[in-house]
Length: 239
Image (cartoon, rainbow, N blue to C red; front, side, top):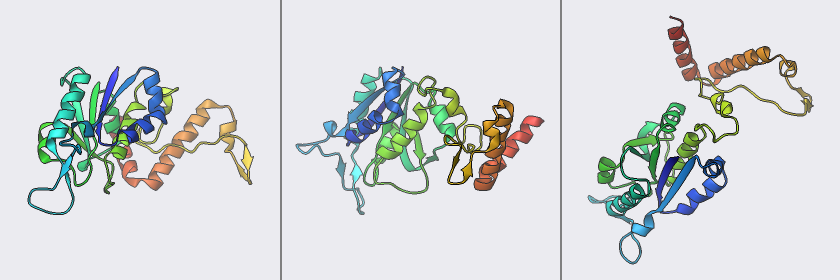
């Protein structure tokens, strides 16, 4: 069973998303086990302090190293030791998150996510504990819980058995280097707009071909960067 730990001072956010998303299905099917660690349990003093002012001055606060080290020790014990544990820190300084990153992490058995707050985490934690840093884009959000859950959701849905049909994930945007095709459902016509005839034909090969053409057309128009990479790979595979 895959194990995912999350270190956070606000565990309610993580628990709520798990309960109300595909992640709950992964838990119920005993494919993933989550360990949510409340960082406040390891805070210092009567007020369970987890942050302090930065050395050298400046605005903002920094998350202290000792509570983080203790939380990590606690999670590693729960997860059966430190062997093969990958520790991920969502950070603007990280490598940009992508489908390939989600796919690669879906094959790792033990993952721990650290949710940063304030100006970030004491650098000594990053140097000694964190193995991977990922960014969800060139912007900043106020805490690490949402980026962590975006990454976790992207990882877990790629694990066989989590989705009702694994093939669905394999045709999503980015799975094959392209954006996905458009989809339609009932009714056949609404407000003068009709479903493309090919989708009503029952001819599976033609439908497959139509969807591939739509993927290519949409990618070329909306994401020329992806389209360029896709063409490169196509040419390489033809050699």
